[in-house]
Amino acid sequence: MTPSDTAMQAKISSLQPIYDTFEHEAAPYKTQAACCKGCAYCCTEAGAIHITTVEGLAIQTAMTGLAKPQRAAAKKALAKEMSRREKGLSSPCAFLMKNKACMIYEARPFACRRIYSLETCSKEQPPILSRHVMEMGESAIKSLQRLDDTGYSGHLSYILHMLDAPRFLETYLAGAFKPEEVTDFGKSHQILINRMFAT
Image (cartoon, rainbow, N blue to C red; front, side, top):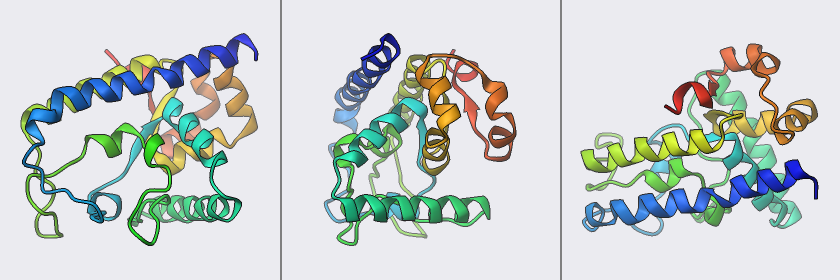
């Protein structure tokens, strides 16, 4: 394992403490949540799932543990989701299975971990969150961006697409910061440069 690999593994390992801190602090506000097993409204209707590049690496690692047919289905769904997003169309999460379960649940990004609702969601009733939990979520996002200071944030399908590009992946894993390499894609896909938003 190279020094850059070790550094990136350390960043991936540092994701969980950020997630855990949020869960601990938000727990008292979520005792009355209406969320239940089998509800996937947030995965289909509530909005886009945005991640950081280091979370993308964690998701890619989780994907290697999937059965080959499941992994192929996820990649196909990601390509479809990206195409629909580029056309301004909504799309269910590529990792949502037919039984409404998440195929990468243990590696799900913060965007999935932070959302909950005090009322049952529907198209007429979007998720209702405590203002305090929303503020805690914004603080956690800043922590994630500081952790991934040479990386980027954007929609899950876009970030995973970037990580699939060998040139970008090599630059990122080396810890180099070269936003000029993603300028065109970044502008057209609303990719954020983490270090510009982490303060």
